[in-house]
Image 1 (cartoon, helix red, strand yellow):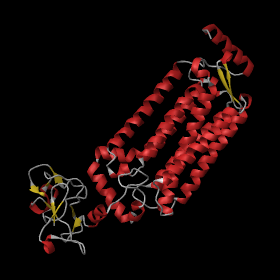
Image 2: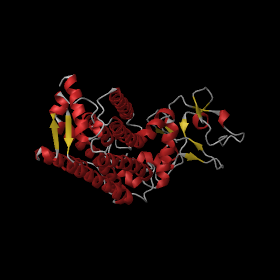
Image 3: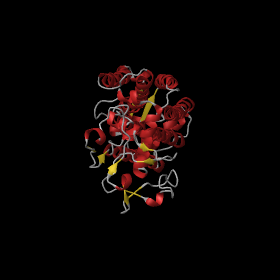
Image 4: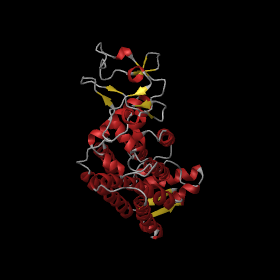
Length: 406
């Protein structure tokens, strides 16, 4: 369509629908750029998380499902671009069922379904004490795909007159009110399922703050869903109105990204700025919560399923990580990656030589001070019943990092 024809179509639609039709403008381009930038930043965070997948707090966040969730958000946003009227609908953009049904609707549903699977995994591990791996993972993925694709297949084969129609002469995608209602009701059903699972998770206590995190995700989703419902019901032709279409797309961008940030934002931030200290605290809290059994059944060897597997070596390390020198403030000698060049920082100690000056004092340094573990390159560990030590076998154990354990 020529520019003259496009202007004529705008005038015709304004008269026919009795609304002020705003043509595609700079504002639409800006919102597309904002969306691409925000999704790009989130993608970089996910790439960083995969690079540091061996960091336990990150590995515990089920990066496979979180990544699929982010990809769904990107494709949902791609469907928003033509569906919400941010580009002139000609060429490939005028294939309305492709963008409305197979991008916007499908991946919006898959995004919600990913949360259902994630919360189901939490429920299975913490409430049912069953593993979430292998065949269970595959079944969950198949159910998500089949359920959502089935709705879209029905939408595709049903007549355009009652679903989504392409009006090429007017450069317009016409989504019927009945189809909007059906699509929105199904969204509410999906998030109602999430609400049920979150209710079941209300009493779990663990090192990952699952319930608080889940509740924050749910609140964000409901805000976006309410905005979607109000916009579609109160402003039937919102894609023709600049302010409303910008608001709709920006809300989708914010919702899709904030929910991913809520899942992996904290462990990624801690990995960057407080890597060793946070992992130490995280592992200690894991033991205090008494949730080791749940984590043992939740992940295979080297897997990235819903929770990180705590091995026997990790558990014994945690049980024996404090040496009490007759004081309430114990010296931490937790072996979480300290190399052979780590030394004890004398300035961090009180005059009694046994306690730190403050809970936040840095006990380790790279300076040539007194070597860690009582002026030798050893790690002190309290013997456990039936655990061999140098006192009953005559030799110390070699740690993977080169230090010996007595």
